[in-house]
Length: 168
Length: 310
Image (cartoon, rainbow over all chains, first blue to last red; front, side, top):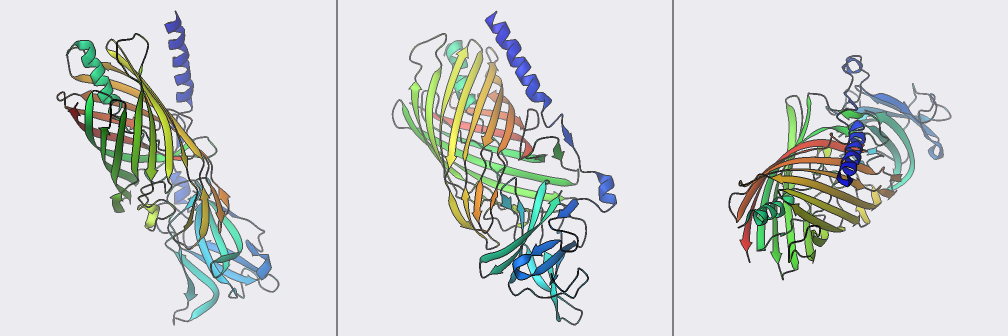
């Protein structure tokens, strides 16, 4: 009798756990969203006129992807900086006095990804375009909620940081 | 060797022919050592496993996000374990994995390989099986130390962090293993707790951070059946593995979510001789839930063990 009760209890417990099992409750990446070029949902902190805000430096910045972010390839993007007082998202763009730095971070997992390569944008003649930076080697190693942390650094010290959220 | 003793021997051999499987990069693995559970002086084990990542379980719960057909991530692990009895009750052991990780999208892919995290352990037989008992199990108490001998996600340089093969922390663990054979059936219960130590690290992107990991633990509950008059055994085990949140301070201030995954393992054992044994196992992290904040995988493993009697 005791064995029977234990057996039933065990079976019920396993059934409950199986109900929440990933094999019964999962989804796949939506191919339609990918076809429309909206593989990822994106938003940023701040308002529309200042998507990425750096109050101490009196700067705003925008982040634009070369293509919708995916796990499947490099996800290059551009950062554009303008004066919070005088510029707009369309320009004129200005170089921050501090060093611009960008990194990927996955808050839930507590880790990032391989380092992002960030370099000043150049025109066709090779001259540096002020206030525009190109990021490459941007790899999202798994699906979920990610952050692009854009930082202004003095040496290795982080002076200001603004976060762009990405959900894959 | 009588049947009863022979079945007990099979159980002892195959109960420890598993490993708690987890993605090699991201933790969620328990440190159950390869114990000498029979009347042997020493043993050497080797296993090769092939693991495929199926998808990710979200940190907040809900539907897991499975990967598309074109996205293929796999890892192969060749693992060597050794154990030696210092006395009737005390034994020491060590394990070293060699891990290859690969990620491919369609026909584009890359991989990295190298040594994983090395584990050392010592075990004490607290409940020896000196005479037959209907209820008393054979019991071990073990202590383990995992060394961060391989790059972790905090040290990785390669795209997709393919060079991350360990957790990146010194970890100590304590656990117990209880085994019981009743006729042709066998049962095992292996609770384990571990604690990882804080570490300061300069990430590959130059960020200076302090990592403070928390507690983790696992429970392995298994049962098996040994076919009469044959060297074959079939076993099934269920193992929830929990890993606490990691607090990050410094250039990045963030607290991760905790991780939970359930390993379901089906194994087929074959005892080649009294000194050699083998098993084939299938482990699946999608069959039981809930799972939280982990990469979910399915694995096949082939295991061989050589023992030297006392």
